[in-house]
Length: 188
View 1 (tube, rainbow, N blue to C red):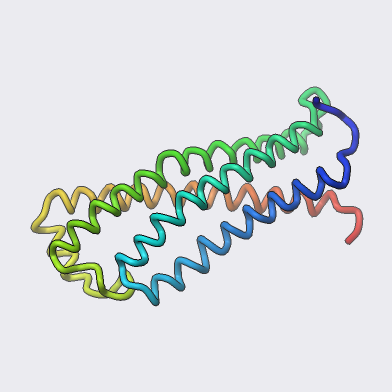
View 2 (tube, rainbow, N blue to C red; view 1 turned 120 degrees about the vertical axis):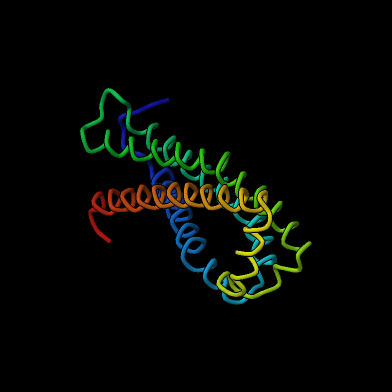
């Protein structure tokens, strides 16, 4: 039931844990693990790990965003919101919406396209090179000679771009939400 009363310590702690969990996952997954795996694993192993982790990461992120929105909305009824709180609830809603689209559509399509491309690369003896920048000529040649691979490559680039933009939007939303919480602290 919505309330204008001050949330208890457990509600505040849950909000902070959810936000910190999502923020930590985003930073780790986006900026650390991908770079480490790219420089130490072959393309297909990297792709296999990503195809297993990305859906889990995206769905867990969507859940954290949804729970953050729900928790915030329970303690901030619409008719009692000031401008700052209204903006914050909009930020949470944007994060939930973008995270859900990313989890349900872009992440799923990326994984499916990568799986198809891996099969085509394996048939040509490709995919065992370490890092994404090695053996570019062989992949370029495959793009030139196989129209289906070229089409999948273009689709993969598009879906990865859209997924990355969604991820950056959610990172920005969570950074703002952390700032909002920090401004609300009275002391450390």
